Amino acid sequence: MNRKELIQQYKATPTFYGVIEIKNEQNGKIFIDVARNVHNRWGYYQTNLNENFYHDTDLQADWNALGASAFSYRVLLKADTSETDNLRQALKDLKAEWLEKCHPAYNQH
Image 1 (tube, rainbow, N blue to C red):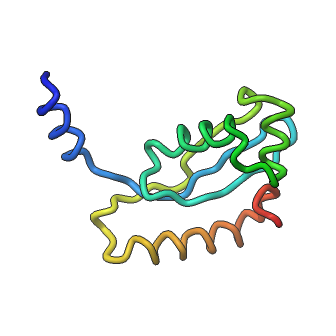
Image 2 (cartoon, rainbow, N blue to C red):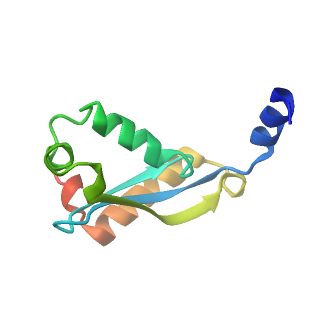
Image 3 (tube, rainbow, N blue to C red):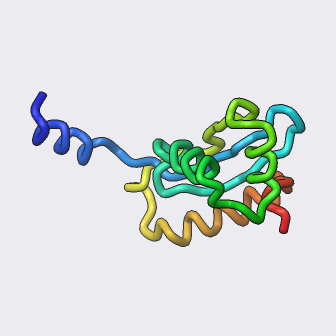
C-alpha cells in the first residue's frame, strides 16, 4: 500500500470520542479525562508525563516516582464522532458527568 492509500485509509477510519481513565495500579488512584479521539490519547499522556508536562500534579509526582509500568489506561466510554452535532459540548458534559460519578483522586485540585 502506498502513502496516498494509507492517508486515504486513515481519513476514512471512524473517529471515536469518549472518556478515558489512567489508573495507578499501586495505590488505586485514577485520573479521568475526555478525548476527541480515544484511539491515540494514551500516547499523548505517556509523552507528556515522560516530559514532566504535568509538573504541579500528584499524577506527575506518582508517575515520576513509580514509572510508567505502574499505570494502566482504559476507555470508559466510546462514541462515534459522527453521532454528535456539538462535540465540544458533548465532551464538556461527559467530563462533568464522569468527574461527579467517579470522584477521581488525580483530578482533585
